[in-house]
Amino acid sequence: MDRYPPIAEHGLVGDLQTAALVSSQGVVDWFAAPRFDSPSIFASLLDHDRGGYFRLAPEDPDAACKQLYYPDTAILVTRFLSPDGVGEVVDFMPPDQTRTATDRHTLIRVLRAVRGTVDFTLECRPRFDYGRAEHQLELDGDGALFRAPGTDAHLQTTFPLERDGQDVRGNVTLRAGEAHGAVFTVCASGGKAPVSPTADGLTEQFQEVVRFWQRWLSQSRYRGRWPELVHRSVITLKLLTYAPTGALIAAATMGLPEQVGGERNWDYRFTWVRDSALSVRAMLDLGFAEEATAFVHWLVDRLHEREGRDGEPLQTMYRVDGDPDLPEETLDHFEGYRGSSPVRIGNGAADQLQLDIYGEAIYALAQGGESARQASFRGWKALARTLDWFADNWDRPDEGIWETRGGRKDFTYSRVMTWVAFDHGLRLAEAFRKPADQEKWRKARDAVVEQVMQRGWSENERAFIQHYDSEVLDASLLLMPRVGFIAPTDPVWLSTLDAMDRKLVSDSLVYRYDPETSPDGLRGSEGTFSLCTFLYVDALARAGRLPQARYTFEKMQTYANHVGLFAEEVGPSGEQLGNFPQAFTHLSLIMAATTLDKALDQEQRR
Image 1 (tube, one colour):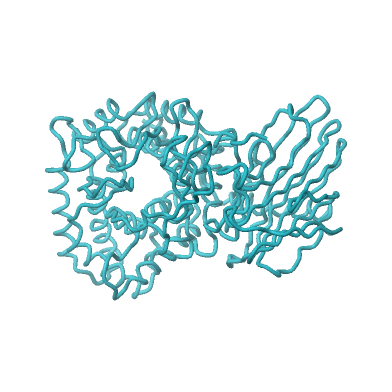
Image 2 (cartoon, one colour):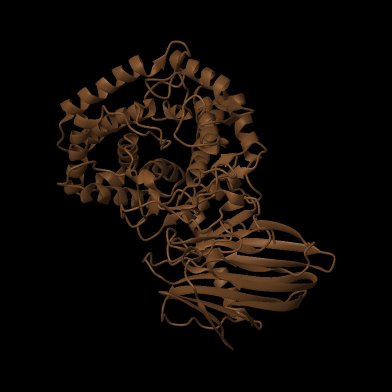
């Protein structure tokens, strides 16, 4: 077992309320429950010695490891190949289809021999509350019970377990065709013990989970050139969505570094208004209206919450249940992934001023179409009051989309999305015939355009720039043609795209900006942002540069991991960096694929 396997050497399983990472060596090295943003139970990915893990793998240390997903599902298969035989561990979590928040979550691990003879070893070493809480082990014939303050964790197996301090071990030898299972269930203290697993019961649960995922994916309308890539991305977005509220988290993990050994280690297990809002259009394009509608309702609820209060109507991010309280603290007892510290929980960027979120929020409501039309009159009034307030408060410096910690600036992207807020607000008011101060919104929209064209443009660079006091380029502006601020073939935009080619693109991979020329208040460097690379593909396709767009898209696929997942960044050696898997990356992949498909189809028809 590697102390710290590569970030990319993992697959993701989940039950739509929480998720676990399983390494290609059969180790669950990240799992938090009962929610995505709960304290961890297994976190050896952040501290091998203190974090805890659940290993289920052959004893042979030289066995080759491979992973794949069962077709069109979130069921992960880890295969081990050795001279003595071939074994598999099948990991999955049964989704709670009631969509009711629960403190009970189950990870099922089925082990079987496919060929020959395989000796499997089990090690289960939970470490509750980010490794800060002690636990006691109770071991009997029905399995193991780990008791920690407020939490019980049951491990039940179809083979014997033995005590190893307050942890457990087990061994079982399987011959071709034989199978066993291990079921790990987390619940509140004193919760009802689960039923002991049986071979037939595990098979039935497996088949039920297969049916759930394949039935859900069958809604997809995607008929383009990259179905496996797109469908894996949409399954990943579904896995990162908290079903009880419809809120999409940014990533399943916290603390994974943007630079190994550096300090850019953030907690991404929360719902960013920006990321989730942009997912609405992508989900609708693929036919998943229910998921898009759920987030629109979640967003309207956030607007309602601030009615009658002073301050900003929206916060940058929230917990999955809409709680705005995300205090940032460090886990000083964790060494961090390969020494990358500090390890942070919570996120101080929740208190930042990021004005672009109003544009993305209104964009989501506009894209939501029928769900926005069906919103209550009270919901419309909350939206209208937000835009009335924003018309008086948009012209301010902020921290921007990248959540820099180097002081507020007049970020061009924030202004572009400000324009989107007013433009789409006006469209909604017209389409739905709802009361609105349209003249006020129109004046604000037009003022934003004038300001961006005068102050957001650099004659030296012949490009739109990151903020008004700089000559720095910023890849977030690749969204400008997509949101309709500028035509994708406008000479001004094509000149900006050329400048980005020169300054931000490295062998088709795209940096978000150059931190050396635009200090962001943090030490260290970072890799290229996978999100930005897919936005680059989208912009190239819209500009009619199809050979370059397709080549970049195809090339980017080679940076996906072995099961089609992406982290936040690609490092200098092609390694994946940052929290994993990242929703925004998979969202932008879907955006790029659908745009490129449409452009290629149009070219073929011509």
